[in-house]
Image (tube, rainbow, N blue to C red):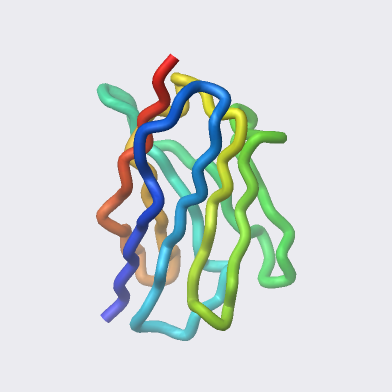
Amino acid sequence: QVQLVESGGGLVQSGGSLRLSCAASGFTFSRYTMTWYRQAPGKERELVAGFITSGGITKYADFVKGRFTISSDNAKNTVYLQMNNLKSDDTAVYYCYHGVSRTWGQGTQVTVSS
């Protein structure tokens, strides 16, 4: 059974940084299948960052380019989202998603105070 467990969220001031982690289990890990999404109150869930290829080519939403970085540690079956220069608009619940099994994690809350 595929399981995704996010961690690393919290309260941070505008301009600060956080690193989210998504620990995966229950499948043969490949970063190519992992994506980060977020959902702010009253808004639809939106893609934040993901891997285009298993070789590590990445894609980012325009609103996070230059501020967020997705990475992975295959030995730990974990995907990370480094978030720098956070803004109040980044306040949301952040989810990781495994595309092959269509499994979502439980989400981790990120709150950015201005």
